Image (tube, rainbow, N blue to C red; front, side):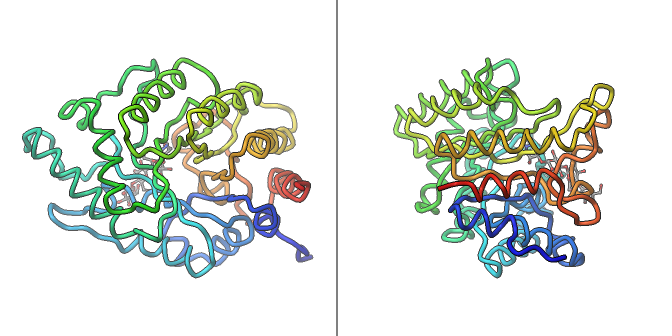
Length: 323
Ligand code: G3I
């Protein structure tokens, strides 16, 4: 029986941005996929299509086909678009070799990339993950081509370059494992505080929320959100999925998963976080089973048959319960 209202309707009514990471191919070919996407969400993030590697097949060539497909879908269905991601150590083009460039050339290369991509989607991308995962798990700066060549200033530069061409977009630093108060989120707090002190145009922090053993303590997530908000930053939950170690999963883990999603939404609503993005549409689209075969294989809101799961209903009920 068709629903009277969908999760997307509930998000719209609550003025909340509920998003999903999407891929271009199933948007083109799989009606079930985009029907679920429209049913659940009012915001999209390109899961891979706006990254440097997928976008730059050869030296000097940009291929915007898939990124445009995602952007066009968002526009056609009145969805907000989060851009992901301009600067990352991962998913670089296959042909790109650090040793082919001097440090100055690498800076020029990165500036050209940020200007080209953020400039193309000016006015279309509402929020950019400008720099992704610059901090290592122990809180030190992550070794990367950009850090090796340019030092910490690559973050300042990237945000300034993005701001040059997309002054109306909200510019985010995005990372994983920093959802609650911990060593890594402490380091990110200091990093962003320093950038703000230097006048760098950073607007927000993205907490990815890949939860592989249920979600972190909601109290600690709330405390973490508050401290970033107190710095004057917006906070988004940018890449949520919820799994449990297979060997030790709760008996009815889909019910527990629904509670976990709702707990994080509760924190968002209580702490002024207006965006929560789920990292995929259906369980069968998720990156988790390939990368983490030891955890439960159903981290998202829709099952492989496009049926909404308890987590879908829990989020919908909670959004319908906002004043
Ligand atoms: O590009 C090739 C394609 O040419 C080939 O046909 C296909 C077949 O295997 O593989 C394609 O590349 C894959 C790509 O996804 C696109 O599907 C890569 O092998 C695969 O490693 C890549 O994984 C992505 C991963 O980032 C890369 O690190 C995941 O889909 C994507 O969900 C994941 O997303 C990241 C966020 O960007 C940052 N935060 C963590 C998150 C999860 O790792």
